[in-house]
Length: 333
Ligand SMILES: Nc1ncnc2c1ncn2[C@@H]1O[C@H](COP(=O)(O)OP(=O)(O)OP(=O)(O)O)[C@@H](O)[C@H]1O
Ligand SMILES: [Mg+2]
Image (tube, rainbow, N blue to C red; front, side):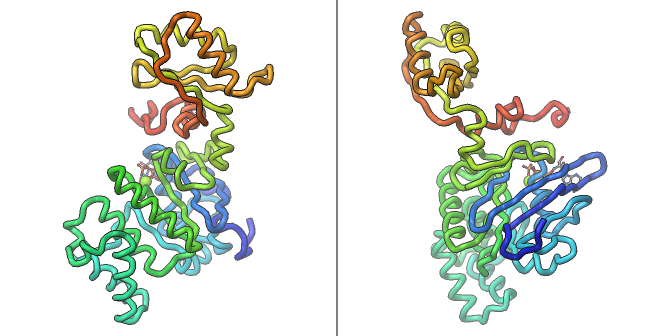
């Protein structure tokens, strides 16, 4: 690893954190380029928060090393703290104060003069769609408003690196979209964002690179395109007219298209076939066409059909043999 301050925003090597019997973080290597959103994707208990806390100097690693803009999180912890800001599964705002009072207070703590703190607070409340709620106590905010004021509080001073730990967990779709817009705006100002999420579509929307973690280990890393390509060139999504014929359709497709994996969807008429570049050089579209022809020959009616890149859900399933968010047997026991 390098201590070059113009190097990556984050670089870790063999990072470990142990709680009793649990290796919460078990040898994590990450390189997070500057000026981007980097997604850390993993189910409950994967080790996301523990990783973030070590990078933000809130927890001391039990092994390995981590550098933030070249500064070591243990030996140069004070330098690191001046470069990072953290929001997420931690309280930063005071429930009894209003939106304005919170932001002005934090601005004052950061050394802004009173007038400047008030201007900055008003700007952020406006930008985050909280102007109407500025004079309300934060305890009366909805979940989405609360998340937005948390992020606003963490970017009072534009940090070089912002940790967002599951910023949209539990939010409705509209509030999630608002938070996503805020994240995009923060990155546009030059901040590097490390975003943890359990939502594959969130990583897909925001992140340029993604590390998938499970049981404290990075099980895949790359750009979205690379991760998707690792599970095949594309996916054919089919909806049949008749749920009773689904098993037959699966058998037919698996025989006709040797090597194609067919997956059942929760919807009883839906299935997904993952198609790659076949051995014979046929592309995904040609294989999809062959699949449709096969079903038509057997008189299985297809109501709906689409060909797309695999979703990150499918990537997770391919990497772990279980859907994202599903408990593992040990974890459930
Ligand atoms: N302070 C602690 N003491 C003991 N065990 C802990 C502690 N913090 C975390 N763990 C354990 O370490 C593992 C990783 O937890 P962590 O909170 O990092 O996961 P996560 O990926 O953030 O999960 P979530 O999506 O639920 O927030 C889990 O098995 C958890 O129970
Ligand atoms: Mg967590």
